Length: 330
Length: 262
Image (tube, rainbow over all chains, first blue to last red):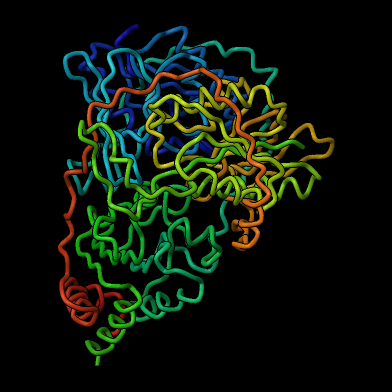
C-alpha cells in the first residue's frame, strides 16, 4: 500500500463538479500526512482538457468510449483496475449519485472497507479517523481504520461552513498537473448502457434565482397546506420551495426541490418550515444570508445550522408572520 | 418478471436518540422502528412493475423487532411472497453484515430484479443495494426514480437522478440490483382491514439465515454534533415569534429591500 490519496473526478457535460475540487483539497491535506501524493482519477472519453484545472500532484487519465458518460458498471471496473495497479491508501469519492452508485460495489470487488457520509477526515499516528453523519444528521460516528479504504464524502456546504470549521477552499490548479495515462480494462461486455441525458425543467419559477424562499418539508402535512407558504412567500416577495418528501408526495413540482438531487440555492432569506435538515437537504443550501427554521422538533438538525429558530407550530407561525408583515407595512 | 424487494426497519427519527452505555451505538431497546421510507418507495416501484409485466413481487427482511408488520403490509399491498430470515448474528447495526446474509439468500432465489431503497439512515459502511450488487456480481444503478420493463424482459430502462435534477436514462440487463430513490407514484395506501386479513392468512415464510456474517465496521464513538442549538431560539407564542421575525427581517433590510410589504 502506498500513501497516495486518490480522488474520483466527477464530471458531467464537460464540467468538473465543485465537489471534486473540495475532495482534491482534502486529498492534498491527507497526502501530506500519509507521505503520498494527491492523485486525481479522471475517467472519460476525450476528457484530457479537464485534467488541466485539477489541483493534484498527478492525474491518472483513463480514456475509453465506454466511459464517455457515467455508466456505473464501467466506472466500477475502471476504478477497480486503478486500485489494483496503484494500491493507494485512500480513494475519496463524492457522496453524490455517482458515489452512491460506485463506492459499494467497488468496496466489495476490491476488498476494501467503505466509509460513507464522511464529513471530516484526519490522519492520527498513521490511523485514519473518519467522522460520518448518521441518523439523518442527528449523530456523528467516529471510525478508525489503519489500512486502505474507500470513503464517500459529503459536500462541505452549509454544515461545515456554519458548524465546526471554515469551508474548504475550492482551488483550481494554476499549473497543469503531471498526467499519467492508464489503460482501461476490457469494457466491451458491459451489461449497462447509457441512453440519454435529460436536463431538468425549470418550470414557472427558477428557485435558484430567488432572493427569498419559503421552503416546506414533511411538516406541512399535505398539499392543501402549501397555500400557507404561498401567502407568506407573496408577502415577502419570494417563492415557495420544498424538500424531497414534499416533491415525492406530489405537493410541489420537481423544479421547486432544494437539495442534493434538486436545486442548489443561495437566497438572502431561507425560511425552512417543517424541514428536519437532513444532510441531503442541506447540501442544496449554498449559504443563505439568513436561515430561519420553524420546526416543532427541538432536536431537528436544521437548528444546528439556522440563525434563528422556533419550535412553535408552523401552522400558527406562518399566518401570524403574514399578519405581522402587513402590520409592519401599514 | 420475478422481483425481490429488500425491506428494513429503521429508527424513527421523530424520537430522541440516546446513546448506549459504551457510546458506540444508540440505545435500541426503546426506539420506535418504522419501514425505511426509501424501501417503501422501492416496494411501490416493484408493485407497479409487476402489474405492468404480469410479474410477481417477493419481499424479504431480516428477523428484527416488529418486522412482521411491514411484511404483512407488503402482502396486503400486493406482494405475492414474504420471507423472514431467522437466526441472525447480534451486530447488524450497519450495512455490511446485512448485505452478506441477504446476498447469500438472494443468490439462490432466481430473481430477475432486486429492488431496495437507495439508502437508509444507518448506512455508515455503504448502501445495501450497491453492496448486494457487488456480492452478487450483478449490474447496479442507484438513485433511480423509474424502472420500466423493456420488450423481451431481458433488460429494464431506468431513470437515474443526478445533482441539479439532471436525469440519465440507462438500459440495464437482467438480473440486476436497483437502488430506488422514489417510485413513479406515491406509495399506495392500504386499509387496515386488508392488513388484518393478511395477518389472519399468515403467509410469512420463515427461513434460516445463511451463516455468512460480514465484518462490521469499527466505530470508536457516536456523538451529537458540536454545533447543536446554534440557532437563536425565538421564545413566546406564535404571535410573539412572528413579531420578532418581522422585526429581524426589517433590521436585516430583507423586507424593504426585496419589495415586501414594508
